Length: 580
Ligand code: FES
Ligand code: MG
Image (cartoon, rainbow, N blue to C red):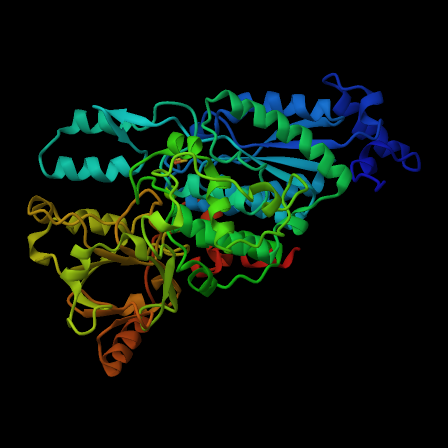
């Protein structure tokens, strides 16, 4: 049997001084020398739950069942905190914290006597942060989702977290509800512990962690308060001890084949536009080549099978009862879209785990012949506005197509007049300004919101139309930007534009009033501005010191800005990728 790495702390007769120091301090709360020197695996529980992180807070309860499982399988549990990441509570954006939590966890896993780790995932960025760290350190690791919240309800209708905010905001703008009712409506969407019950970034990343093979099959979608959530916590604890004995590591599981599976599953579930950023980051830390273009090549023609808000009607409880990830993967296997030989944490392949799994509710998880959409993947666009950006084609409505169509003979090319905002504050100040003369044929641009411009990249590209247009029944305009969009938003947007304006991207040259053309067939997005004019704008911008962005507010903002990669490359810390 392989010597466990924790032996280097607790059992080194050749170095008695250090052994004594390590032992006495870990014994001081009641662990015995007998236990620590027994050769039992030491299992870390990377705890992301806290009062500051309500989405993951239930992990503080579930951890007890994880410990039970670890003990039962012959391991010893060491629970420790991870830097909190709360998607909705962190200013200026939780986008700043993914890489910080990653760095912190790498230090813990590397520097302490840990043989294997349970990664407690849930809220949006906790999942990628922990999987990125597991990829870098590459010790046996298993993810445990906290599980989604129960369904939200208001007056007999499902209210989904995040998604309801966009809807309620429109209702308030249209004068249908007031401030109090607005707050009540939004609160109704969060009825229990757990992460967002819509197919936003949290549900997406938890489903993809299972599709990658890093969670026990069937575990991603179990609602947080359900009894089987506690049971899977116990099974996860038991399994990680076995994984340590088997030396089953992230590099055995998160292979190129597993990442291809994640891309396919993302299309089928209607996954968040944040997925390419986070999955791309995990792949980079794992050393797996996964260019952004793969999202289109592999994922574009996969149909939308999961009928969850924002793309569909249902919520997380329905998704779980219909069979969750295994039911989706089972249907994808029947259509030869899954690499069935990809290994997973339970020591079996994804094919062995999911072959034959079927949906128990065919309206919630559809079969191929009844899919919600035929092609649900992302288009990767390029042009003089950016080198790459993604678009979720599944949210493009017929109304949208008609509004921006420039030539009936070319139904995949769209044109409109650009309205440009520099950051979310500028947008909030000016969106209702009649001087902009925004009409239903305009495209809204948001720049200065990438990883450097708005440190961490803000989720602000989903912009609502001005109030006067909403009152006329125009509920969304095309939005384009170098920031991100909440996975709970269903608006037709072109996102994650890289390089961002603050990194010298073409978006910095765009002016309000320019015409912009988007050609879905060619995969292009261009401002229709002559090259000489662009050159003179470029020279003027350079003479003014380049695209201006706000000052750093904290040391970490400055550090991250100095070494962060663009969204199209996973927004990883560039030097960190060297450590494999
Ligand atoms: Fe944490 Fe949605 S805000 S999961
Ligand atoms: Mg989000």
